[in-house]
Image: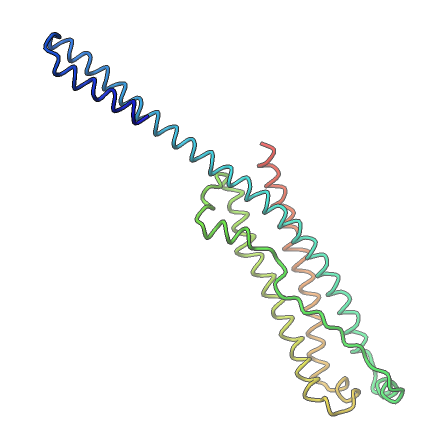
Length: 235
């Protein structure tokens, strides 16, 4: 394209220098050459913009495909996390229901009380989103509704899940601390301790709350976002 512009620029120069043509002919030829140059420049800019836009939308398409896979994996992890919370709650409630007499009997028989450990941590996939966002490409998503749903999910919903899991783990670690503090005492003393039992009660409450967050807030949002991505893919 640059070669064409240079060629027509030279033709304008030659036309100006050509003494055989009248002034009217020169003006006419110059106008034609200028029009050709302007058209060539405009076409070049349009082709570049079109090519760049096409490349951007290809990147969006790849990103959304990866995001959909992440969301499906999130749903599996949420279901698994919910199951872990439910199992832990059952075991914790069994511990809370033990009477001093039952605990004493367990201790005398040299049996142990099983204390479940389900530390959750950050279970959500954020790598693809963070990478796309940090590269400044979120603006490439032209569907405003879809873009806002993605931002809402990863900047509000996902941090909320991580936070409730973090709070749960903090209470679980309180139980561990109490166990370490009472390592030299009979086990039934620990499980009868009011502070320890209250901490376990909070674990159960938090587990139930986190199940609600998974089921009522996070999973439906992930499913809805997958549907929006699939609508975009099918257009």
